[in-house]
Structure formats: structure tokens, C-alpha cells
Amino acid sequence: MKSGMAVQSRRRSSTSNLKSERDHAKTKRDEYVGETSSKGKREGQGILKFKDGDLYEGGFKDGKMHGKGRYKLADGDVYEGTWVSGAKHGPGTYWYASGRADVVSFNRDADESEGARWAVDRSTAWRLDRGEVVEEITIEEAAKIAERLGEPVPPQISAVSPILRATGAALPDGL
Image (cartoon, rainbow, N blue to C red; front, side):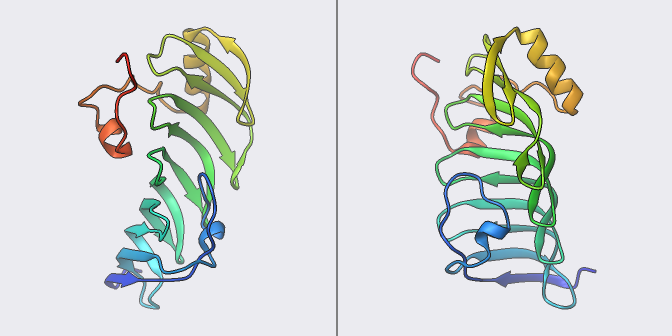
């Protein structure tokens, strides 16, 4: 149940790369703006800005990231996907600040299955297994992997791309 909007802070430890809710549990002051439950927990839609510059915007349940959301790392990378009880769970797209993109699927924060990676210009693709590059594949094969995961093929970014604006990144040289 949502009882209004609130700003919350809490402690957490420093971590690297894409973090889960558990990784942020014991850190310095983070700031939350969004809906809360009658008990004061994050509930509904909100924005959680971490002390290290990372930012999560999306759903919360029982105080944890839950449902659809976008997690922007301080380095400009962005992950769009689903969380369950503070952990990445299900399919999503990881946008690198460079413009490269991965379509992957998580199971409680573990990259669990086959995925696909596209080059910045989307002319080359690779098969991923649990987040690791296995082999170069055709663009068509990569599109089939994305389809099996229920995600669209990531569009190529341009100077006016909403994804580029979301990551805060610059276009790589040559584009």
C-alpha cells in the first residue's frame, strides 16, 4: 500500500559494476524519492540514488527493488530489466556507455543462460553463455536469442538516442 512520497537515506558498502539491492544494504547515505508504504518502506515507483553515483528508477516492493526498472551506473552503463526482492531476475538489456549492448537473463542476480551481444554499429554479434562471449554469430542468430528471451534487438544508438541520453555517454569515435 502506498502512503505517499518520502525521501529516505541509508548506509551501504561500496561495490563495483551492476549491483543488487543486497550490495547496497550496508553503505553510506543513499537518497530515495518516491512512494512509500504505511510502514515507511519503499513501495511503488521511486528513484534511489546511491552515494557512489549509481541510480535506480523503477518499482519497489517491501523496501527493495522489485518489478521493472532502470539501473544507471556512475560510469554511464545502464541495465533495463526486472528485479525480484532486490535481485535482477528475468530478461533485460545491458547498455554499455560505448553503445554496445547485451540481451541477457538473470536468475536472482546470476547471469543464467544464453544471451547475445551487439557491437556499437550492430553489424556484429556474439553469443553469450552466462555473460561470457562464446562465439561470433550472425545478426539474425542474435535476434533469435533476444526473441527467445522476450526482449527486442537493441537499436543502434545515435546522438539523439534516448538510450544515449539515459547513459549520459558520448558517441564513440567514428559514429
